[in-house]
Length: 144
Image (cartoon, rainbow, N blue to C red):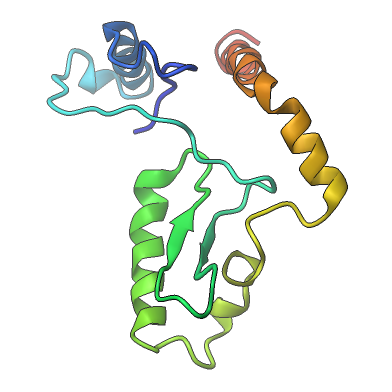
């Protein structure tokens, strides 16, 4: 189950983040109240510019593949992405319609210069915006 963690990463190990997760589990699944969590991890949410993951080989001359941009759904999506990368590496992708989806064939970067400039100009404010979005989503999910 995913949860929100530290915006900056500096306090990712703070127990408050694990408490947010266990409280959410208890609200959604009351029989699991007070369940012990043996393992947890925190990290940046990997979101692409268009909110779609990418499973691709950035340079066709190289044998390096990547799967990223899961938008906070990494646990489930990474298993699926691993399967799809394995199929591609093994050459089992020829003629399969699933591989015609944009997540396999579109670039990860912004498609035009204006979007690139806009992205770089606002980059210093991403964490600030993320903080307010988290608060807004919490308010909308829990109070409104």
